[in-house]
Length: 492
Length: 96
Image (cartoon, each protein chain N blue to C red):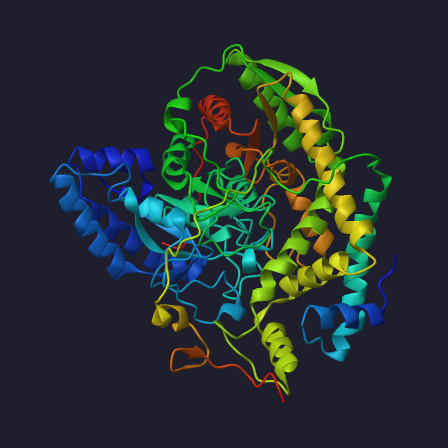
């Protein structure tokens, strides 16, 4: 085996089971790859090689004793939004200082319970607020992908930019990520990786730094649909520590990826054909429709008529929840405290110096729409429009089993290209944000490359709790797409 | 509804964010840009629509037994405190 880092998760687990290599060897290969690539990509903000080596050794011993868990010895990257006991967790914000949790998030605990090990913490937009990973306190993540032979640095997307970049560049077998408006699926689409946001409540939010609690969901970014199913199986599950955690039993996600889609009805929403959409996105979508038909599915045009209101709704609901959630950063119990003339002065200075520009902007919007006199006009109205959007989906799912759309309105853009205009940046999430508002499972998978050789992704949205159909359809599309493009390792 | 500089100062105060004077006008412009785009929600007929308060239908908040499940670990609780003493958080003077 030449390069262990290029394996899929399923392939690596199989190779360890067949004693072709050990977790120690696999882990060492990733540590070496990270050392070379990270100065160029900035995907990891903390690396934990010694911890990883120790865990790999334990995993090899467990496997030898016949006690291997489903993810035994698999090296993963963990988004910096997940609290990891004894390892700095800052949500890539200055306000958390050198915060080092004394507890473990449920999702990472589940992964470790099943044998996975952590290579380090992955870069992200500050508090997961961004679509290009440019708002991180630790600087932007660089995508391993380039436009042809150009050297311009491209965004891996955001907010889970570190996760997407690391998986795409073979710096881990898979990664955790979170998705509030598209933060798993948009970076996956930009980097030729697979990312699934499950039904709201599938993954516990306990120990994940909160952004917008009614929208936040964890999920994996992985190399294949099957890998994403394997990871989600371990990440998800009921947790009494999260009152919104679902009690429903978990289906076998990996088995669902093998399911035929013959006879399934797949909806294609006309409202996702937006103004100014590049012809290659339109062509990609049409290609996806053909692949679904070839696999025996029936295509049905549907209408999700409130789609255009989803982003403005999101930009009321999410900042409102964020302004409440982020009220806890007052410099008293954790984080960096900044002096002031009185108590309010301490609060104001701590928060002004700790939060970055985009986060401050969103806190102010959230505070404004919740303030006396504006609550009904903005927040209450947005919650009603959100209901309309969710109802569109409920109506559509009366007659379809899944919905197929493009994942993003364009391929990855260059760093700095959109950071001056907040609204232009927000429009990146136009196809993904609806699933968050409605709480539905949705996956992004790579399907083609554009004229510059950059990946383009398709999205499959399912009914609440029906990740199985999402996995079945996306696995069928993945097979037809046969996406094999990889970024050149220009940093090596 | 246009956001003027006075409103920006008021909202910043409510949010406990120190906003330097030279940032007030640009922030007002940024917020107005975003809010103008949000105004399109006024086109939607929401007559008789129940506000959506939960992403999951029919979810009721579970109750747990009223018993102690964790605690008595002041060291862990205080570990990340900017300032602590004798098992307490030390905070700026609140009462004169």
